Amino acid sequence: IVLGIDNIVFISILVDKLPVEQRPRARFLGLGFAMLTRILLLASISWVIQLKEPIFSAFAHEFSGKDLVLVCGGLFLLYKATVEIHHKVEGYEEEDGQAKKPTAKAALGAILVQIAILDIVFSLDSVITAVGMVDHITVMVSAVLISVGFMMFFAGAVSEFISEHPTVKMLALSFLLLIGVVLIADGFGQHVSKGYIYFAMAFSVVVEMI
Image 1 (cartoon, helix red, strand yellow):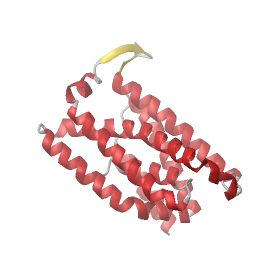
Image 2 (image 1 turned 90 degrees about the vertical axis):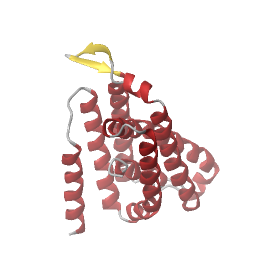
Image 3 (image 1 turned 135 degrees about the vertical axis):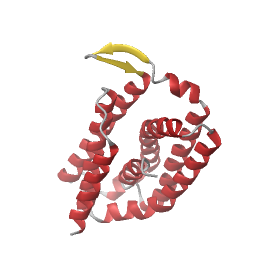
Image 4 (image 1 turned 60 degrees about the vertical axis):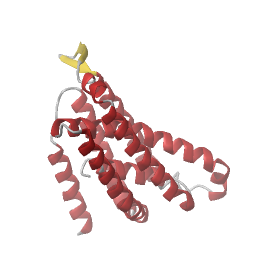
């Protein structure tokens, strides 16, 4: 559930760009794909373990398949969050609503692709954590089902809250920038404890509430 916070924030921000009637469907499909990705990765544990094997060395660090996925995912998250912040500040979202209607299906497809890309990165992190904690795949799959169900239950409320409060949306985008940097650092072998990240998020939210 804790590792799923990143997923909910990212999905909420992307889904906010869709027409209101399409948002629940996009959230359901996005989180459904997150669940499917986690289960498929758990079913391929031997392959996931191999991702931790070094492939090549650079910058005094041995890069594995996992590292490359984390770096690419972090770069994508930095790019996406920066673009969204730029659009929010510049006011590009305040375009004519009628101009967006013809491309609604295309927009939904593009957003689902972006969610799918980040789901793979977030799922890899969750699965590697699960493999390190438990030996039985049934326990891992059960935990995935419970956590995704929890995310599906709260995703709508979180998405609506972020959508209704511009300052919270900016804060959420800042969180995504922070997570992107942490993913890149992790890919380069510089591990940052998630506790620091979530403490910074919690502190910022408390300040926002005050």
